[in-house]
Length: 161
Image (cartoon, rainbow, N blue to C red):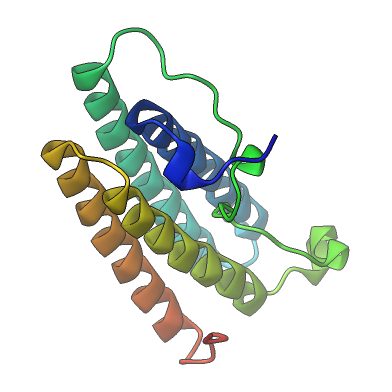
């Protein structure tokens, strides 16, 4: 059954945020490895972005440990309406190594960062805990900074809504 973010408990929102950051970190690390050897700058950029997502996950994990006991529940983003934050390459031709182009992956990453920001802004509205809301606001700002950086990499060619 698909639920809306407004229906989640704060504990579940936090767990969902952790899983999203983990998924993005993994995707960005994969991009870094794919570009390694033929475009070091792009590889380094995606490696740095993956590390940043890892720091976001650490902040969320620390908050979870502070607020709740035990491990975070497994919340699948596919079970939550409107949450599609992970870096996504829709066209299967991108999965062929030789066809990867930095601009295409930067575009997908830009879109993911924008969705991440939107997710955290929604999360802020759905938690009453001031400390958790502050963390979500901080992460929304960080994701917005990432999107701005990627937009510059794209030469302001990002598909704006």
